[in-house]
Length: 593
Image (cartoon, rainbow, N blue to C red; front, side, top):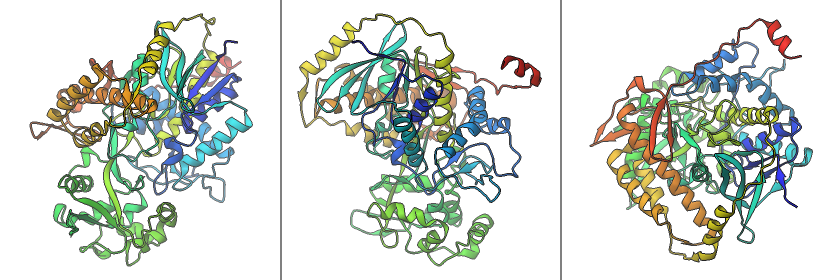
């Protein structure tokens, strides 16, 4: 019998399970979760020293409001004001749901939720349950969705195509990874919660199991916004993890090692007397920022330059840098270490006092910071942009919703942890919209032509272990990450388009065939956006644009919502303003009846 779900959710992280649970709460229960592997996603496999969740202040003394929070989300530039307000006004409800499900966010003796300052924000809205906040969120939501709600999980299914008709989504083609056959899953609504296109970069903090699905969404007809706006920052590479927060606030020693094993302590020479101050500031100014290129982001540039010289860069927690002196630290750093009782003779001793759980993260992966140096690079960490969606998180393709990091919810910068809030709010908004919209009668849509194309790939596929597109990722990290060279981007875009024109039906395996095609489509879209955007915007946000060896200065008048379509069109769209909801209470009371 033909099965048509009311909705399917693609992904198995915090965003996907959030959407599944909100749908169930709206009495939409004929749903399913589709995932390549239940344990693979970024939410379950990433974190930092104390991974941040950003929500409205609930500490009992901070003066806050949804409008104030929306202003802070909006102020970074290129952010839709309506979306910022939605994230703010719904943050309390979404946060408390997580707490009630067992995500044990810290409370004070009176029931308030204390907070701290995070990246790109001067409030104390940030909270955390430690290094694995998103993992714990995912586990608690998963328990509710799969066990409490009884929502079916379709595991080991790799989505290779969204089926559409007349710009409306009606289902998905999936590769059953257990037997390398394809299946068709029909649904009235599809929610993509598949994360960023993490597959594009060699230097990446995304877990190696994370690929994303942006290329598949592009083929379905979605549009992208702010796709050039990424966060890049220092991360360990042998085990992928952000070295933000406490890892920087204890001021480790930075060393590089050349091919002969010679060690260099390079920051004092690269930066000068403020090197230790800037290292401390990287704790909550962790993402590279064009606006801080002559301040704390000098640390990122110095690390990048050492790697470009063929050296490996490490953090050493066993000893202080040659020029470290507690009394000579700037006031903020010295007062922080005193206030947190973290003054000690070495970085590892300071880290033990400040956040011992941060040490445990690496110890659990065979790296002992008491004796081992930590290999790092400047890595891709988060895509602020992504698929363009409306205030209900519905894409340009009707019935296709995109939430979490796959959606372009943010602009040039975002407060650290706001993405975790967005995973929860996005699920709520699309569930509400699906519940309230007029559902069309089930159409007898024929996908015969699309199915024949996919069958042709399977029938003509040839296994070839020598096929390797990793050089694309290496080139992307070199010319299209936080330092972007226009001429090199143009060369790489031309090469990728030649590959895609005659993408061969051979690869090491059928699953990798589709993964790499998705990576190439995503990289094509990003390179196109970088090249086309550069004359209008110059450097901005988390990236420096370089043309003919010269840094392009920022044009502050072009902070618009960037949208591209099919990697052939670019235009700027004015951002929406933050809405004002000041009608008399009685008006809302009457409408609620």
